[in-house]
Image (cartoon, rainbow, N blue to C red; front, side, top):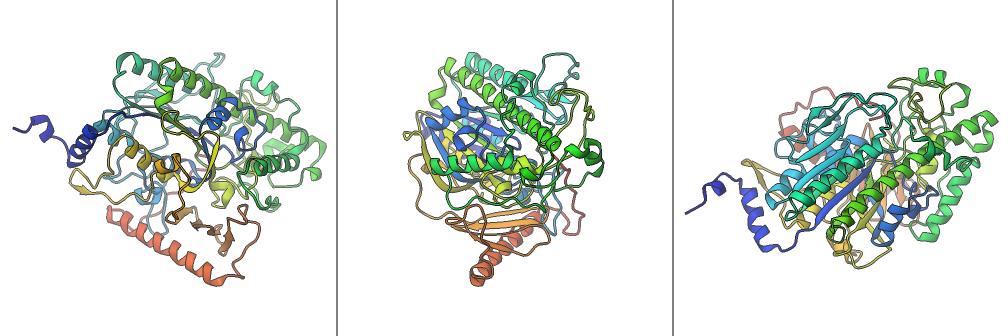
Length: 544
């Protein structure tokens, strides 16, 4: 006789339960997502910032050199947790279908916790949400969410298990990066004490180093004078280390003096005064006052990355203490490239307060963002390599035998969810509550943990605010909004320095046709979910 409980399960849940019976040990999974981190900001990707904990994970695991995000916060988070491009699930816009930060996923687009729960996993999230719905409704067992992204010291809008918490009073020692790690450690401790027989999925979503540039004074002091040589020198030094590490080769991109922030906030520039620089200028062309101010901003950015690394070290120490590190897959990546944005929000900017304190509101800006994204061009929101390239560290002692190696497999955040579902012993759903589920465009990374795959990956696609791109093997077409298509051979020219559109018109046409076909396919799917093709597109919220 069929158990009554089983009768209540969906087809997908039953399939997963059957798969679980045949699957032995299920590893834990910890996904660590940084916010606005540049490709080369951390030490093991060529940066000068002190990141010993991430460097150790890389030395005892793998570094992926050609992994991509979506160029923006909420599309990346939706894609990472669902296994679909954000445009497929209304979390970013298509030319004829609305979507974006306020978009609602179709019911068939489940997030990872709901896919993992029938497999026996408990799920936790600490940090930034920026997905539709709430963590509790989406299957997370515990959550601490900071919805106030304008304050690292005294947030006014944060929740625990979907319930509002009181604002943090000024004058306390609260710092968001530390608080996020505290919650993660608390969840892991509870899991070890009360659910030791179950695997866990923990999504550790830091807000750092997203603006405002705010960090503990002792962390900032560690970098005093570190960046007085400017972003030109920093880019050259990072590029030398990147080449020595074998992470990338070819040519270092040049600064583009015409490129500034993706959004124009004239009032912010006026308030910050002549010390601020809103273009990718040569360091030597800045005034002495500008150089001092810009160097100070990078000191704070470095301090934020440094503090994030320190807190990651505490979380890893907790995994060691509960004897879970060896069988935990840790993935570390960033939601987009470093940001060229310059704005003032939150509580405003007091120029008389110490830079990096709670009373100040600064942004990294295009000069240092270019250094953070070395060796690539452009920034967050653009789909040139600087906006979409992310480090990806994979660490799993019981599952990754090679240590300190590079993986050149082309990957995208849509690959994360299929990887975790396969790792957990499940299969991707074809039905959810009697609804057909499209095949995920993601490809599991598990084979890459043993060796670098030689077979080509399906083309990777981008569209964000009119910026568009497609990478197919070594070739990439890309265009900023309103600009003509460019063509690059990324095997020879990863930094997109030599546009081959005129020299190779047939290859250009081939890739543009693929981009257009994928866009049409996504439009058909998104329109099928009841969204009017004539519905107005939601405007993006700058800085999110």
